[in-house]
Image 1 (tube, protein in one colour):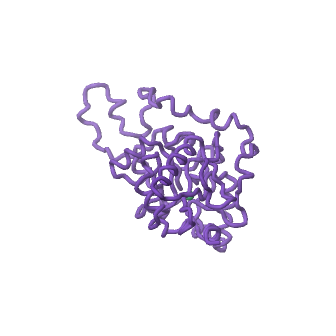
Image 2: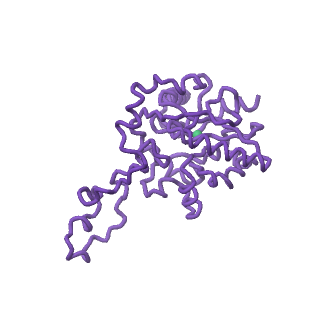
Image 3: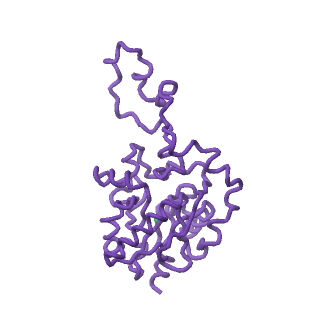
Length: 293
Ligand SMILES: [Zn+2]
């Protein structure tokens, strides 16, 4: 069957499951993944989104940012170093650092913290899966948005499927090792097509690979030309999703174009990026490019 074959054969930078280790739905929600469920998301991680992370500006200026604002009393502000190009990523920012944040930025230089992060509230959206054994679990708000989006596509005559949703740290360990083995132990080759564990957006429960209901071009570059691919490109932002690996951005995202990999960031961020024309999360949040590990 075309769909299955495509899923099995085609590689995806975000690390689609190799055939022999399809995550299935059995391991995904197993509480054994997280030794202390209650401690993982709430304990070691700074408070999620409710708290504004900036109340301590005075005591802790932005890391190594020019100290003009914080250190200089009131007089010589005019001599402030004119270096606005200093990396703004130095200061901790829960909005992009906290794995529980819907705008967390994960890439080859920004592993999840903790690296084996396990999202709470994974649910299976009530939408078609590409194949029966596909793992379609997603975080609650992401699943709800997927349901709304798929319904809208359906009313436009476009059938969508979920090819792959949440993948655990261990799933990704297996996936990555599979591709290393497939490439004769060449990790550089594997890195071009599969994320290392702890660096995959699929581990956040906020990302999924979308397919067309007839299985055309699943996880393949030609998906961009399908009705599903085009509908998603034109409409996903309305539901809070962005195309995470756009074309011509490998030097920033670390991966070549993936017209099927969508990431939930919320309607506000998706709309802002759409309006500004900024294509990557790294650029939107002023984070350094992550072409490699
Ligand atoms: Zn993906």
